[in-house]
Length: 431
Image (cartoon, rainbow, N blue to C red; front, side, top):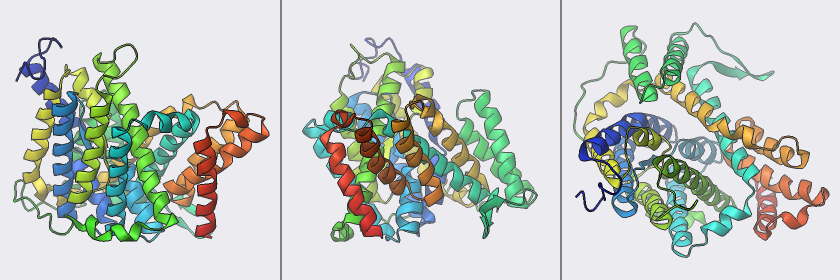
């Protein structure tokens, strides 16, 4: 085992890698409860999604560890699950079964472009400013969902939104959870988000705001409500609307994965000559996990930046990922705890994740108006239209216009011009 994972070469040990795997798991364990809560809003069976989440995370992380040899864990991605539920299913009215088929197809496309090594062309075609804007916009969108589910933000027929009743039980619990989680994060507590959820749930049970669970350990929920459903709805994807959805799944996963791989690999000292060794295998692991996750019954599975916590604890090889994968399998038996994960418990997580995602705002060149406008429209449109796809579409339509008017049209990749007309057609279709 130590020869396979090259412990000596990476100057590591079983103990160090095991601790790193546990650290990574604790940092991202919240997804086991948050993902089912979000996808259940799309009409999916919460128990089945819990099992699919744990299995997708375990399988994806295991493939990453064994095939690519990286200490990087995978799980259904935050942002993509929100897009799945609140944009595709809620706003666009697409059945969750069809949305799952879209996720599966995006994963298959990801596998193909990985095998044929054309991912670099796609990355280079889309300007960094729009990539940063998309990530930031998704962060605001997720935070808005969190504020709304917590009751901190409420509907107002005159002004659209207003401040909610902060003294209402569930809202007060969510505010408490947010403060506790922020304190843990500021103190750099490993697994701060996960522990914040636990503390919030316990306090909620004490004050009768959260139902008591029937137990802690139980049988594994059945996958029957979601397993293989995507295959029966592939024919529903033949439309411009669904093409945009599939491309959005692909776009967000593609760049989220690339950014996570580079960030964690750099932290672990794996990068060589500014290049990522075995990048193809790592991307193949990620795309395979997306396909497997969709078959099992969950939204896009992707690499998690929380893996950096495991690297900070000493993880350097794929054995870290193997340990994390094993813990996700073990977590399958803790499904009774799902009953305590109410909107008040998950809302602080969504808000904190939103904070983390908007961190790239400072990398956008706001002093260049031709860039600031499409970036701003991308960001602001996502929460205000309740649609990630709309934000991306607006940015991709406006960017070629501002750049051409500025006299920099030659700097735009032909793919961006093609996307310009695709999204114009998208808006015409919506109209």
